[in-house]
Length: 148
Image (cartoon, rainbow, N blue to C red; front, side, top):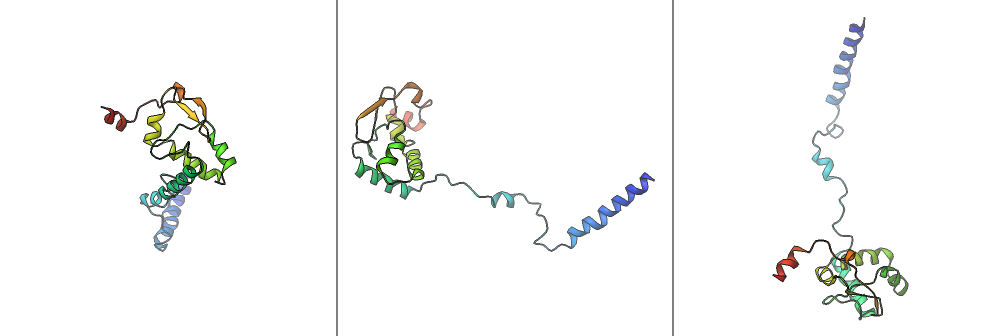
């Protein structure tokens, strides 16, 4: 009896379910190629702030706070300076976050980030010093090559 039910089940699966996919139009068929699924996913941008927006924000901050911001010789910023920027400028939190993320990852900023280097507030006053925990753990390979 069990064999009879099993054979009927197999017959049902083979002829009804598989034929459903066979007669389905091409747009509704499942695609066995998974690369199409990967390509259609939303890709995260490499950086949330474009280069033009970064330069524009940097120029604005250089005019507002010339003692601190510079593209040639960046000074190390005090910790939680984003709160001061929010209070003293009309920049959005998102713009400040993305700008500081890019600004603090520049080669020149990282090169200036050495132990006991002074940190500056928006007026250009010393607001602390860099500790050894805050220095980069591994030096940038390009900076090491340039020093040699």
